[in-house]
Image (tube, rainbow, N blue to C red):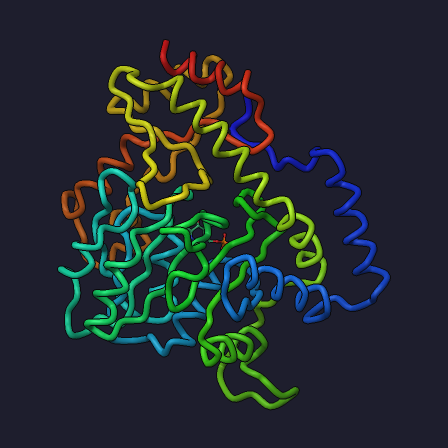
Length: 362
Ligand SMILES: *Cc1c(COP(=O)(O)O)cnc(C)c1O
């Protein structure tokens, strides 16, 4: 069984995507046009904020927002020790220093007490990540940020549609970075990303930075970049956004089934949903001290699994210059050794979930 399917065979979807592509082709407008404007309006409404700014990908969404917030050389930015490397790469890209904080052991998301303890006079920002689709416990992090004057940038690349105390990701922090990489809960048919915010200044700076640092054609006020969300991807995303709530519901149903079928399985830890959270299960991640043996056994049965992520960020060659060593972040290291993502996509059948769960239990 495969690990993931893009779900493009869902009834009616291909016709909608083809119609979206035809609309763009017939319009002759490919960049910064009406489809992007419409998607930005629709996605801002979905997240409950004033502004969405489309950019080229999720990493650029993080980098450009840090730049828009004025974060750079000499600054410290608090990041999760357990996350996808892009969160740390964004901090490096603006010349700031990533300061890792260990996760809450139950939800695998940033521990608010750890954030408070990691603040120094150089700290300027914190990037909580709603990892695997579970929202971060944001209120205590915002309280710490307010006490110390920090900018909070949520990385919601894995949590489109998740709720925290009834509020959607995208509206929780000063700004939120999203990726629409094809496998994300809301995926384009190529690279794309966006930032959501209700801060008009951050929004205006992002629009300038993504377009060569220019608000006015051929006048450049900052060393911006070219990182825009194409019209054709925006048109595809509008079709998929309309289907996102149902897709997230389907993920939740499949994961509830996994949870029941795997309850009490020997040595296995299954995902939790905090009482204040609505998890959207970008991934269904179990934890096992026998992870490698389990993965190998499932592989011999033709069941695809992946590891998110096998090397903790502080041990990645790209971050060797930060001087961290094995043992510095034991929880992140244990998770790198023990997590396993089981097959999951919204159209996966209950029979397939049952078959995977039986194979895991065996
Ligand atoms: C996917 C992802 C990113 C990067 O998004 P891209 O669009 O691939 O650049 C950043 N952070 C997290 C947590 C992600 O999962």
